[in-house]
Length: 134
Image 1 (cartoon, rainbow, N blue to C red):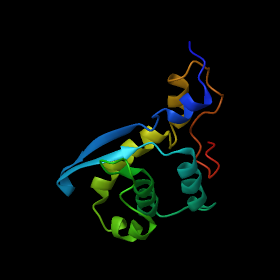
Image 2 (tube, rainbow, N blue to C red):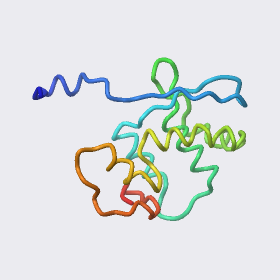
Image 3 (cartoon, rainbow, N blue to C red):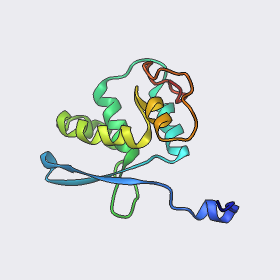
Protein backbone atom coordinates (compact mmCIF):
# COMPACT_ATOMS: atom_id res chain seq x y z
CA UNK A 1 0.00 0.00 0.00
CA UNK A 2 1.22 3.51 -0.83
CA UNK A 3 2.31 5.77 2.02
CA UNK A 4 0.53 9.07 1.54
CA UNK A 5 2.20 12.45 1.69
CA UNK A 6 0.75 15.50 3.41
CA UNK A 7 -0.17 16.96 0.01
CA UNK A 8 -1.93 13.77 -1.06
CA UNK A 9 -3.95 13.62 2.16
CA UNK A 10 -4.98 17.29 1.99
CA UNK A 11 -5.88 16.96 -1.72
CA UNK A 12 -8.00 13.83 -1.24
CA UNK A 13 -11.72 14.26 -1.85
CA UNK A 14 -12.98 12.32 1.17
CA UNK A 15 -16.38 13.86 1.89
CA UNK A 16 -18.91 11.30 0.66
CA UNK A 17 -22.37 12.36 -0.42
CA UNK A 18 -25.59 10.51 -1.12
CA UNK A 19 -28.66 11.79 -2.93
CA UNK A 20 -32.04 11.12 -1.29
CA UNK A 21 -35.41 11.43 -2.99
CA UNK A 22 -37.92 13.44 -0.99
CA UNK A 23 -41.27 13.27 -2.80
CA UNK A 24 -42.91 15.54 -0.21
CA UNK A 25 -40.52 18.28 -1.31
CA UNK A 26 -40.75 17.46 -5.01
CA UNK A 27 -37.18 16.38 -5.66
CA UNK A 28 -33.88 15.15 -4.34
CA UNK A 29 -31.50 16.44 -1.67
CA UNK A 30 -27.80 15.72 -1.29
CA UNK A 31 -26.58 14.58 2.13
CA UNK A 32 -22.85 14.88 2.94
CA UNK A 33 -20.53 13.50 5.55
CA UNK A 34 -19.57 16.22 8.04
CA UNK A 35 -15.96 17.33 8.20
CA UNK A 36 -14.25 17.01 11.56
CA UNK A 37 -14.76 20.71 12.24
CA UNK A 38 -18.43 20.60 11.22
CA UNK A 39 -18.99 17.56 13.47
CA UNK A 40 -17.38 19.37 16.43
CA UNK A 41 -19.67 22.36 15.83
CA UNK A 42 -22.69 20.06 15.58
CA UNK A 43 -21.89 18.33 18.90
CA UNK A 44 -21.25 21.67 20.61
CA UNK A 45 -24.81 22.73 19.70
CA UNK A 46 -26.38 19.69 21.34
CA UNK A 47 -25.40 20.64 24.88
CA UNK A 48 -25.71 18.22 27.78
CA UNK A 49 -29.48 17.87 28.08
CA UNK A 50 -32.17 16.41 25.88
CA UNK A 51 -33.38 18.50 22.97
CA UNK A 52 -36.58 18.34 20.95
CA UNK A 53 -36.53 15.75 18.18
CA UNK A 54 -37.50 18.28 15.51
CA UNK A 55 -34.67 20.57 16.64
CA UNK A 56 -32.16 17.70 16.47
CA UNK A 57 -33.46 16.72 13.02
CA UNK A 58 -33.20 20.28 11.71
CA UNK A 59 -29.68 20.69 13.10
CA UNK A 60 -28.55 17.48 11.40
CA UNK A 61 -29.98 18.67 8.09
CA UNK A 62 -28.30 22.08 8.43
CA UNK A 63 -25.00 20.29 9.09
CA UNK A 64 -25.29 17.78 6.23
CA UNK A 65 -27.38 19.04 3.30
CA UNK A 66 -25.35 20.43 0.42
CA UNK A 67 -26.07 21.70 -3.06
CA UNK A 68 -24.67 20.52 -6.38
CA UNK A 69 -21.51 22.51 -5.58
CA UNK A 70 -21.14 20.52 -2.30
CA UNK A 71 -21.59 23.73 -0.27
CA UNK A 72 -24.13 23.88 2.60
CA UNK A 73 -27.59 24.95 1.51
CA UNK A 74 -28.89 25.85 4.98
CA UNK A 75 -27.57 27.87 7.89
CA UNK A 76 -28.49 28.16 11.55
CA UNK A 77 -31.09 30.83 10.76
CA UNK A 78 -33.06 28.19 8.79
CA UNK A 79 -33.56 25.79 11.71
CA UNK A 80 -37.01 27.02 12.72
CA UNK A 81 -38.25 26.92 9.13
CA UNK A 82 -36.98 23.34 8.79
CA UNK A 83 -38.73 22.36 12.02
CA UNK A 84 -42.02 23.35 10.36
CA UNK A 85 -41.50 20.87 7.48
CA UNK A 86 -42.95 17.36 7.26
CA UNK A 87 -41.31 15.16 9.88
CA UNK A 88 -41.78 12.15 7.57
CA UNK A 89 -39.68 13.90 4.92
CA UNK A 90 -37.16 15.02 7.55
CA UNK A 91 -36.89 11.45 8.89
CA UNK A 92 -36.11 10.05 5.44
CA UNK A 93 -33.21 12.47 5.03
CA UNK A 94 -32.20 12.19 8.67
CA UNK A 95 -31.81 8.40 8.40
CA UNK A 96 -29.28 8.81 5.58
CA UNK A 97 -27.45 11.65 7.35
CA UNK A 98 -27.13 9.60 10.55
CA UNK A 99 -25.90 6.53 8.65
CA UNK A 100 -23.36 8.46 6.53
CA UNK A 101 -22.01 10.28 9.58
CA UNK A 102 -21.93 7.33 11.95
CA UNK A 103 -24.34 8.98 14.39
CA UNK A 104 -26.89 7.16 16.49
CA UNK A 105 -27.16 4.13 18.73
CA UNK A 106 -25.80 1.59 16.21
CA UNK A 107 -22.87 3.71 14.99
CA UNK A 108 -20.21 1.85 16.99
CA UNK A 109 -21.49 -1.54 15.83
CA UNK A 110 -21.58 -0.43 12.18
CA UNK A 111 -18.11 1.11 12.39
CA UNK A 112 -16.78 -2.17 13.77
CA UNK A 113 -18.30 -4.11 10.87
CA UNK A 114 -16.70 -1.77 8.35
CA UNK A 115 -13.17 -1.73 9.77
CA UNK A 116 -10.33 -4.20 10.13
CA UNK A 117 -10.15 -3.52 13.87
CA UNK A 118 -12.27 -5.49 16.28
CA UNK A 119 -15.18 -3.97 18.20
CA UNK A 120 -14.27 -1.69 21.08
CA UNK A 121 -16.48 -3.39 23.64
CA UNK A 122 -19.07 -0.62 23.59
CA UNK A 123 -22.52 -2.07 23.12
CA UNK A 124 -23.72 0.86 21.03
CA UNK A 125 -26.94 0.93 23.03
CA UNK A 126 -26.17 4.08 25.00
CA UNK A 127 -27.22 7.50 23.82
CA UNK A 128 -24.82 9.67 21.87
CA UNK A 129 -22.88 12.13 23.98
CA UNK A 130 -21.67 15.55 22.87
CA UNK A 131 -18.11 14.24 22.73
CA UNK A 132 -19.16 11.79 20.03
CA UNK A 133 -18.71 8.78 22.30
CA UNK A 134 -21.43 6.30 22.97
